[in-house]
Length: 321
Ligand code: BTN
Image 1 (tube, helix red, strand yellow):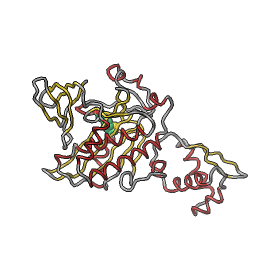
Image 2 (cartoon, helix red, strand yellow):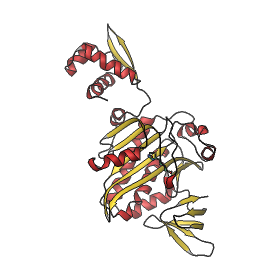
Image 3 (cartoon, rainbow, N blue to C red):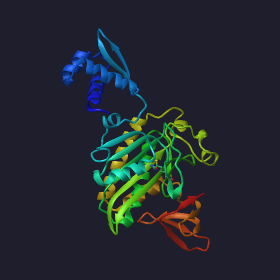
Image 4 (cartoon, protein in one colour):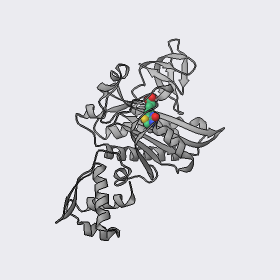
């Protein structure tokens, strides 16, 4: 969106539904009334409901249900995460776009798309990405050993679970990074890293949230185990304020992650966990581990006690129960 359109929106939002004339807008922005009219037309094309009267002026009645960066930025209470937000109507994958942009971006830049043509999940799976969902990737550049990058998946899981809990819904985390509501998945997290030996260049943290999507339209394989914020709330979630709150929750956790022992994050993760205490089967890249999930190490690895009593610590895998 152009700066001018953003300026016009801000003026209309701040006028509290009192009409603002084209002349006044033009004067404030140093442009002609014809230009004002053109920008207003373009805003209407973007889905803003603006009434115009030649006598009184323009009134903003409502904003579209789009995750435009200007909408998210106005009212965002963070200092690093979301400092810059790129919004797209459609992308192949926000993680791919984030990886393309990451070398030239500062930490905290966010990429959002209304829909994804090739949304990617963990372990080579697809991520179904219809409109109404939230598909978002955050670029991070922490100075941590590459081997600790997976810690950020736990950090993001806590943030998403907390943001959903703030809506009054009891969300919890299935190890390592699925967010569940009533045993059904509402969000998945895909962490990707670009590093040289031990130095991280950047981490891309992708989150896919079934916000206002109809999971009944998902493939038969997915729909049984999926839910959405809309169906749990019984009404559509206000996506812009949800994203603002999620970025805030994420920043709080990220600051803790950078300044406190990881143990603190692990404790918080355990308090939100759905997995501890359950009989689990974990498909790791090399083998299947079966047993009871009894805890998480101070490094974030899941501890599984097998039937023979032996304990295994697992840092990556697909957890089934
Ligand atoms: C999973 O549970 O398998 C992880 C799913 C991650 C999906 C998100 S949507 C935004 C970002 N872009 C992608 O292509 N994938 C992640």
